[in-house]
Amino acid sequence: MHQPRRHDAGHTHHGESMNNFARSILAAAAVLIAPATLAAQSSATQSSDAPTLDDLAFMAGCWRGEFANGAALEEIYTAPSANLILGLSRFLRGGRAVQYEFSRITADSTGIMLLPFPAGEPSEHAFRLTALTDGSATFEAPEHDFPKRIRYAAGADGSLTARIDGGTDEARAQEWRMRPVSCRPTPEAGV
Image 1: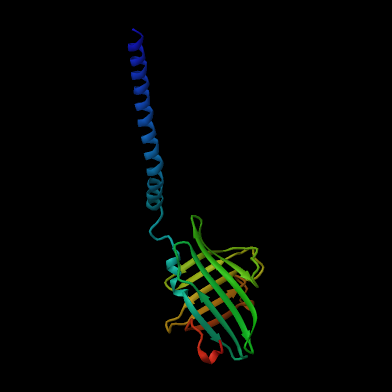
Image 2 (image 1 turned 90 degrees about the vertical axis):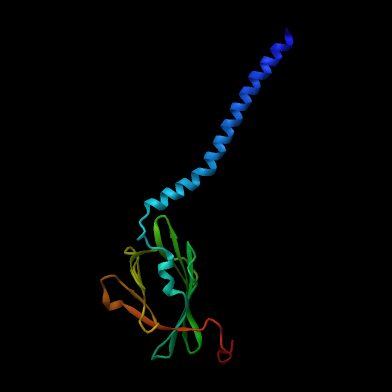
């Protein structure tokens, strides 16, 4: 008589084990499926018109502008990934770098922003993408002293124009027009 109880107890235990096993399978499936479901819902709720870094692909490449005073500006931007574009700028005078800046353009759930690092130091303010048209992007940080606005625009002739200004203060606006150049140094450059 003792043995059937064990069998009953074992059978009950086995039934509970099966229930626990089934619950574990369902929980694991929920954990595996939930991220995909949330991502699908997130994609469905985002507007197909929401800007992506691919919209900034016109900035990718190597650029150089030369000016009447003998100065030059060189900028390099990587091709966009889903979440990052890296950039580098340097101002040259007499063949020597006199100023430089790194930049990071990121995309996340809050939008697209440009984070400048003048002289390698992080800026106090991020510049949010506020306007985007085919071949033109405007980033703004109204709380920044200067610049408050940074704009990049592709020209019909293949050029890229970078502009900074104080928002409504046009007197302080600065603009640089650059042409595409090879990203590989030439022997003439002595590099």
